[in-house]
Length: 285
Image 1 (cartoon, rainbow, N blue to C red):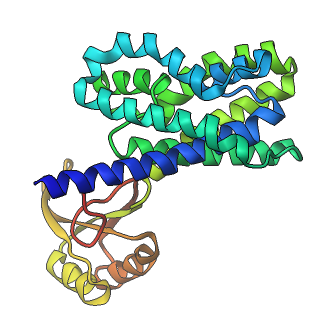
Image 2 (cartoon, rainbow, N blue to C red):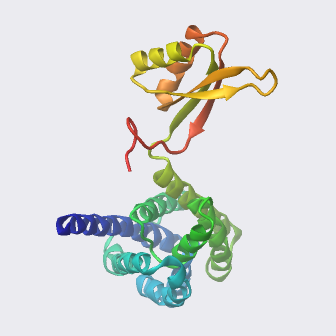
Image 3 (cartoon, one colour):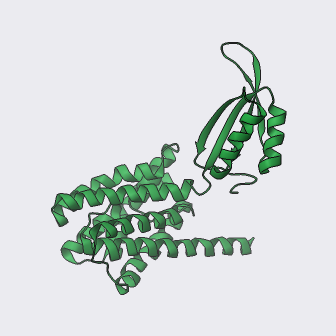
């Protein structure tokens, strides 16, 4: 039991370090020099850095204190403690490690692209370990606790707009920087969602057919994919039909589609995107 806890703690710390490094590089080494308005509490801390020279990591910790006090009861003690660890590690890397790395001061579009992708990947690594970097993350997770059906990336994007606009006005003072800030916020939300929910993206086929057994056998023989036979009834005719459900990879779906039409030309086929597939033959929790 202790070994398992130690292994889990080690994995959490490793994710915090990796995620914190990605966030720090995105914010300090790409965004600060280009004077981008960034989303979240790190964006507010960046405003203080650009205007007064205050360290980004230390300001992030200070700004987190009132947010932590307001959201502690909603998020719970366990999530709070895990997040404090992530906040301290990320803030330390921001102030102690990132300044030792070279600053990027060339093309602003590339800087915005790197900032959004790196930061989004960093946030995703930390979120996937049931932790956060505090600030807007606490607010995001508090909202998601109340509204679990909402996408993390979309919540982040809406909240972060409230920080980007003041950042553009106070620091950059030009419309181009505001546009870059919106692009960065969008990239962070997309990368976060894709890494958190899109690692095992796939396709799902629903086949209404009279030859369900034959189709299942053909899919299994050709692609090694199991299927599930559901019982359905036509709303107009009232006729009972089998509905075969099959989850597969994107590459396999083209072949499965051809195979189904060969096995039963009269079948009715619906192919859908699946943002996450968990289970045998796919990603396991």
